Image (cartoon, rainbow, N blue to C red; front, top):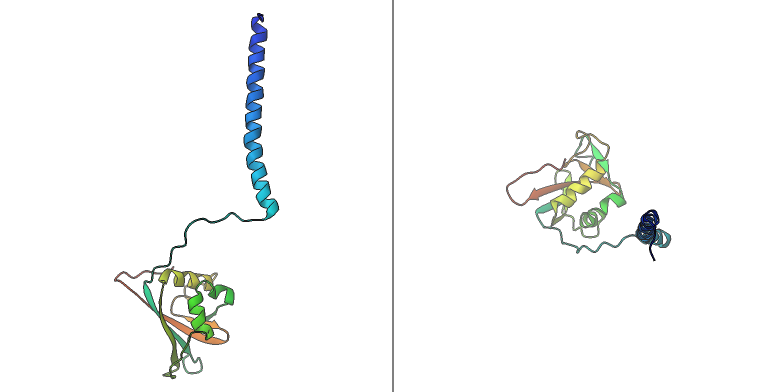
Length: 164
């Protein structure tokens, strides 16, 4: 059976539009329904990247400071949530891992440990959020649970870096 030229062209265009519409619907509905199911179940996407241990690149000296003897210009309060950025340091400051020495000129060493300087820099940035460099920087006192601490760091290697 032969169709006139005008009808054949119209049928081909209609079939192409229908096939394109079906393919577009399948692509759009698949991605919309998939993201909708994730939102409905409230399950966050799973991070499948392997956890890499942090590089040990510094030593830390945690010292408690008696502010009635040593008068620092500024101290910065730290919350428990902020300290969770560096849980090992929080254990020393909270008293879990500390073995304090005797007071000497207004300070006593609470703990010495090795750790990651980038993780410490992240903590300092969080504590100092919204403050000027004059109010908060590495070397200022950190107030935690009504006690004052100074954290001395010694990076391994020769290159010095600034956390800011």
